[in-house]
Length: 270
Image 1 (cartoon, rainbow, N blue to C red):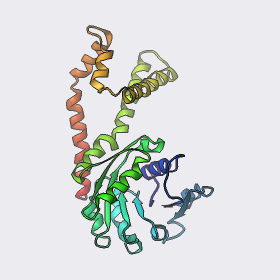
Image 2: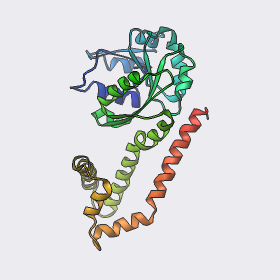
Image 3: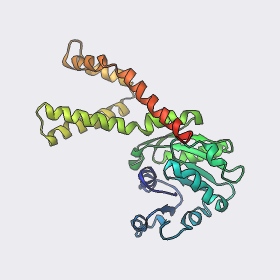
Image 4: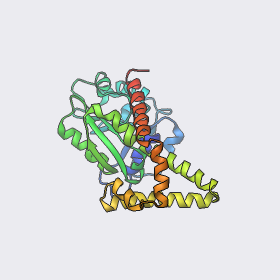
């Protein structure tokens, strides 16, 4: 794994969790020596920093069956070019970057190298991630499935076509931020209603966690679960009507469209 920042670090944390069955140790590279030292006592990770060793990325990929590019989108192609001559035959190169198509990575790698895009989210840290997987032109179904199984160790993973990856990023990749924004605003509203900060946090956090677990365990659709809480002419109905009057459906359409549009801009180098 080359780069263990925000998203790369989330994936690595999930892969290191007890019960995850993958080959170890995991070779990782970091930019700073300080970041690499954080893994000094780990027996399941071997970390090297590019600050200390200019060849760290190239050394890390030698012998690897799967190489995950966990750097920022604008660094992905340059990183792929850097490691190209050191990749093993049959390697699978996985990018978790938004806005970088498989074709851009394939163009700087040896002909026929399998490139797969994965769009995970931060709940992968606790084994509850949602990841979309899409293969490039040289990636076989078996190779795409291998990557899917890898990410399935840290949550749910589904295979999509590459044209859907930007939408995956908009829905589940960025999705935790939308939920946290809801929690942020709901907590602030609770405080304005008279609760102190701790009380508001407890009420909102447990409501979000409990509702999510109820949805996951019930097998019901969210609209049905909402109806069960919304008695005709009751208090919940009044709040729901206010939210629906704000045209939440249109708001989410616009939000997701803006997210996808930014991914498309990144693909164009804007």
